[in-house]
Image 1 (cartoon, rainbow, N blue to C red):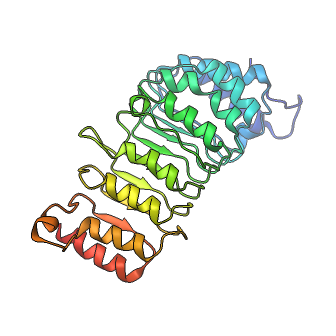
Image 2 (tube, helix red, strand yellow):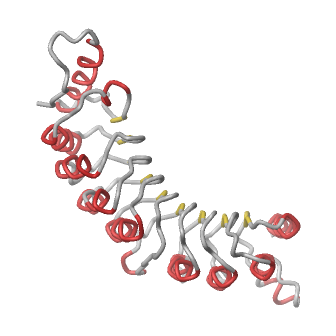
Amino acid sequence: MYSSGEDEGSEDETSSVYPETMLDKIKRNAPGTTTLSWGFFLRNMNMSDDGWEELGRDVSNNTHFKNVYLNEGALNDRKMLFFFRGLTRSNTIEDVHLYENRLSTVGVRSMVPFLQNANNLHELLLCDNNIKSEGFNAVFRALRDSPIEALNCDNCGIEAIEIDSDYSPKHLTTLRLNQNRINADGCRQISKLLQGGGAILTYLHLRNNKIDDDGVAILVDALQKNVSLQILDLMSNEGIFAEGRKLCLKLVNDVSSITATLHSNHTLTCLYVEDDEIRRHINMATKIS
């Protein structure tokens, strides 16, 4: 049974009773138990390694669970290891939020079997951890056959990205990679998600990275024939200068000829760059489109 770490006769009865009641509901598959969230009570349980593994098994066996919200210090790499040793699959979990846990590559690798076998997963939030490039690449490959639609890896220490079109999530529409260190090489990898008739990525957030004009040129080239992406956020990339911003404007409103105008990208509805004047023209062009 879960170890709460509370001494018998503790004056704070609520902190020892409430979480065990909730965890018992998870274990017996109570119909109303749909969310595991990290609050004051669960935080004070001090569960053992075996307790985390048992909790993972119980969540895996629960047929009503939809959400796992373990954020802001709920987990660390060790707890991840044991929790996901038990939680290796799920037919019902839709959303997993694990932000602000200081997780490293080791921590997120622990969840790879779950990601490969969670056949109803729609959203994964890993933002504000330190998973780095290796962690992101491992997660992205593991989601190959997942129905996932939204992946948030903002502020995760990501630099080098490796994307293989054959090992990419086929249903991913939202990708957030703000506040990382992605450069032109990373843009070249991301562009693979924007090319071809099967591209479905709709929202791409790359704010506050190391993207320069070369990176913009790579993304713009990939978007010439793209008909899925609606929002591209490139704000706060200090390496993007006038040339890169003009490329963005030309993408949505190429006035070099009537034919070029007709073949401009008419799918983008928002393209965010730092220059107010260029952004105003881009906004006008996307609204007309």
